[in-house]
Image 1 (cartoon, helix red, strand yellow):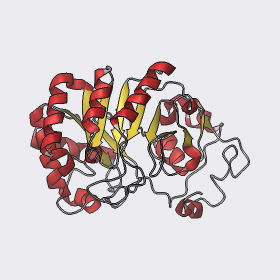
Image 2: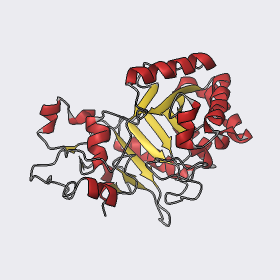
Image 3: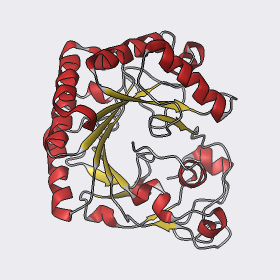
Image 4: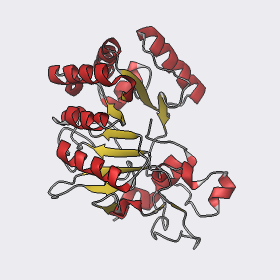
Length: 317
């Protein structure tokens, strides 16, 4: 069932997988270059943000903890399917809530993959075992391990408005640990604060300088500014004609190069999703195997239009 919020904002749209509300052929994207395989480590999180697209919280276990053995199984499938994957990503929830995150990261690093872990760098990461494990992985694997820290804004006031009072200070403490441990670090922010992109990047640059963080505010891979995924806003449907109109190619869209593995509460096995942004939309569940996940994805959701095609954003490094 489609979310009521975007049904209201986009009445009549995003109803048919193949055809738009105007009867035009809906755009689809083939898995042309699978570079990144994401694993959702579980939706549990130590905090509850005001606008979390996946509704992570201390009580939401709709997606349960995936295990290191399950991750290894999909790493085996990558080899069997000969996917040209270079990066394994871990997202949540808060990945450091999952007690097996270090084992999962090591499993991917041991096979030569780059590993990207999305984190709020707060208490779960700062537990002694996690700090020691992250430091050890960084010492052994160097630049192939990256932690992308969520810093919603470069000022404490706006960051805390999203994540709760005191969150900015605790995240800053975690970032200082990562800096001192020699861990490669990037940042994910939000572009919703009534400031231009240039102003935002200048603000992050000043923040990095102040704290000695080796992060480039102008590099879109090191400082990622995500558009807000507001399902109450009306967005256009993407037709096959849009590629030429927009001057874009399907290969530029995130689902051309990535898939995400999740494990639903009560399920015996994980499943593969077309997109990291749509964990609760059954239409985007592709099956239990990477072979099944090789099917094309029809862009039948507002996030497909606003976030990926029109916003040009990507979760990958």
